Picture: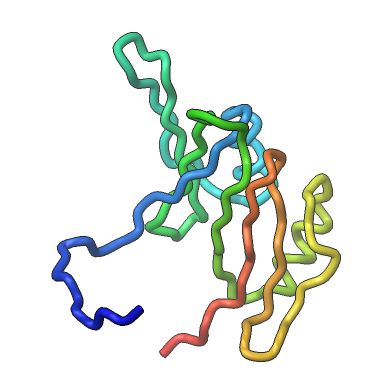
Amino acid sequence: MTDTKQASTTLSNIGVAMFTVADQDAAIAFYTEKLGFELRSDTSFGENGEMRWVEVAPPSSRARLALNPPMRDTPGGGGIGVETSDVLGEHARLKAIGGIDLDAEPMQTPGAPLMFMLRDPDGNTVVVVEAPPAA
């Protein structure tokens, strides 16, 4: 980027990331029962309540993940990163649960934190990354 000017903003937080999913109920089950997320919102909206807004999140997270039906194309193709202080323990926990498309082992490359990836049933990717040490 060559322009060094910074525009002033009032934006302060990434509140919601969004994944497209084929089945919102199945996605809720995956994220809550397999990954241990909380259901934060499940609300009907629209003129006749024909649409549904669903949000899940890790228990202590301010940011949420919306699980939306596709608006145009097919579901899947999104990606988010989540942090943990125990990558190896979380990988072992998810592996023991079973039924998760999970990397065989966590990986670490020079200059990057310990991490592994998993895919939800719609092909969205969740990267589980070692949280940086507290300052």
